[in-house]
Image: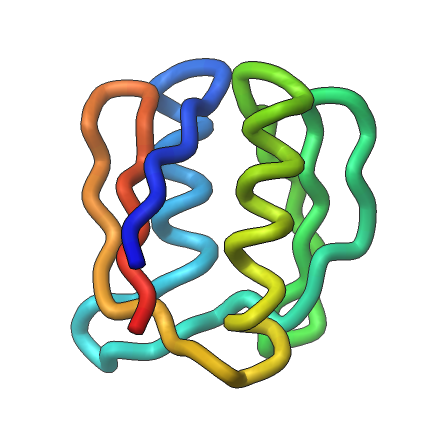
Amino acid sequence: MKITIVCEDEYEAQKLASLIFIKDGNETFITGILNLVENELVVSLKDKSAHSVLLENESNVEKFADFAQSIIDKEHKIISTKILGNQVEIVKG
């Protein structure tokens, strides 16, 4: 399953992609969604840190939260991420 998330800018897209998935180890880092505030998404990672990412709007935040839930529940894993300007294409399987 593939989804494209639109971030506020290219920096936020790079941050989102690097926070949720490491290509070398084929590893998913995101372990939870701590908060959703308007266009801001706060995620927790395996190292217990929390990070904020600004998306384009609330609908992208909700779309990411819905998509990520099965990853958080360990039903799926992230297979790849691809940055396209201010967008992040995420594939899970």
